[in-house]
Image 1 (cartoon, rainbow, N blue to C red):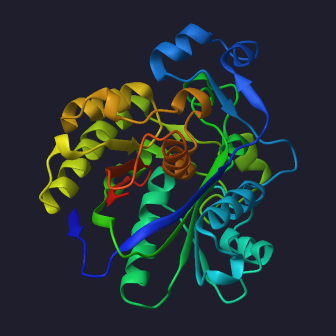
Image 2: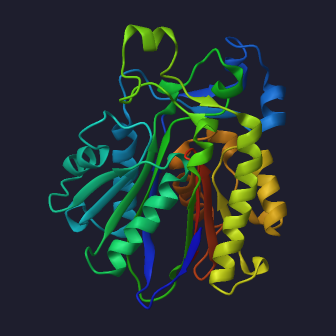
Amino acid sequence: MAARASTSKRIGIVGVGMHVPSKVLTNQELARTVETSDEWIRSRTGIRERRIIEPGMATSDLAIPAARQALKSAGLHGKDVDLILVATTSPDMLFPSTACLLQRALGAKSAVCFDLSAACSGSVFAMITARQYLVDGSYKRALVVGAEVLSNFIDWTDRSTCVLFGDGAGACVMAPVSRGGIVATDMGSDGSAADLLYMPGGGSKYPPSHASVDQRLHFLRMNGGEIFKLAVRRMAGSVKTVLKAAHRKPEELECCIPHQANIRIIEAVAKWSGLPMERMFVNVDRYGNTSAASNLIALYEAAEEGRIQRGDLVVLVAFGAGLTWGSVLLEW
């Protein structure tokens, strides 16, 4: 793990956006098809409902409106960005990248585009990646989108996973700024724990076949207990790491925007990071775990609700399959 403090060139977020499907799937509706209850789900995860796409929709159908909103927020058009990164583990297809499909829809003809796969840490990893390109001057403005349609990869008969996930997209525009911006970043990975959260089918090891479908290899698999412990330790550690790199203290943070996986994880991260829960932004109750979209959806809502104001010190922190984790500390 290596934290990086800011360089002399300031890179900040100049626009944000989000988009979620209109269809709401409540706990009560889930309880009709799988052995569970609203009380069981809420007490263990904090989730009341999640958004699910309609049949025939894809990840880009969520990414496009989120990106357009972020561009509008920044006062820009598609042609004004020259780098597009889409963080996703549920792309429209293996190739071309969802970023290229987004480029076509936005008319961002001069943009370099690629997808980034870091599971639930995807948006944080993508923001850090975009920042590096902007710092060295390779590009002037970057559009970062986290978008997922995980409902297509969930075993809806598996109570341990089907209650957790939802679909959605969040976006931000990044560019050089005269004040504020990203103060420090942190990233980490641990491939030795890759088998704790994974989807075996669909890649080169287990390509689509009658056998892979019969064996249900195209659904997400998770060791929830081990993931919980590692998520808390890695996210809390990452928050401490970026604060230390920036010579800041936990009490200086106005808002922590954690990956929205589980309310118990968020509460534990707050405790071990030395932060009161009122400083933690939480919307997992309404969207569930939207993986790579999670942090950017939460960032958009935190800004819209006035939870973060100009000059506030804010940290985004995430943890996901890989295993991966990371933080972005910024002055809003």
